[in-house]
Length: 215
Image 1: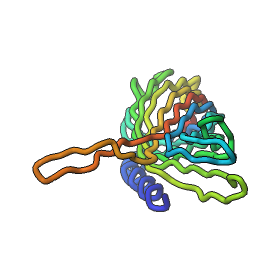
Image 2 (image 1 turned 30 degrees about the horizontal axis):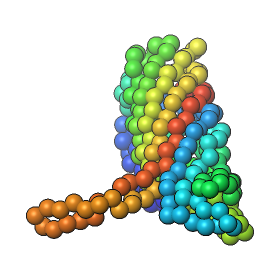
Image 3 (image 1 turned 180 degrees about the vertical axis):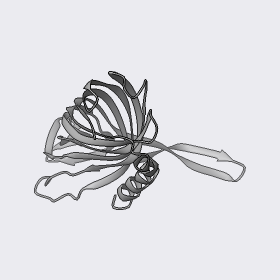
């Protein structure tokens, strides 16, 4: 995490540097919404007479902010931080919430805006790469460290501008986070046989709205 986030931010800011020299606009987008999320399966674990075979991130409210630098009339590069209020939940013979678990996303972004710069409404799409950090509280009195995993983020929406410097936006965002791989059989070739992994992702799907400020 300490490597991924700074390197991602530096990379995208370096890409954006020509935009600053050309006096292009910077856009700041605070947003608020709701995120539906899921988890992954695990080997069965017995806790206080119950058996659990899945761990989940519970859906909850979300907020955050992104910024982008226009390097052309339609293309932005930037960075997004988002936070989901969640709980660490285990599922099996029963479903139990064990702790609060805020989830933070950190992603460098590539954004494409459709239409002209002065249009009153501009649809947009984006993709990004970075990390997702899970920060559970104490679980049954045991302190659990935060953990960061590689993730991407994808989405789109529309920005509506009542005036050139101020707008409102709505967007949908999908963030798959790689958690682990389980053995899923073997693949054999000329050089021998290898274990094939079945990747498991914890997914977040967010619907949000907010402001679009041009500075």
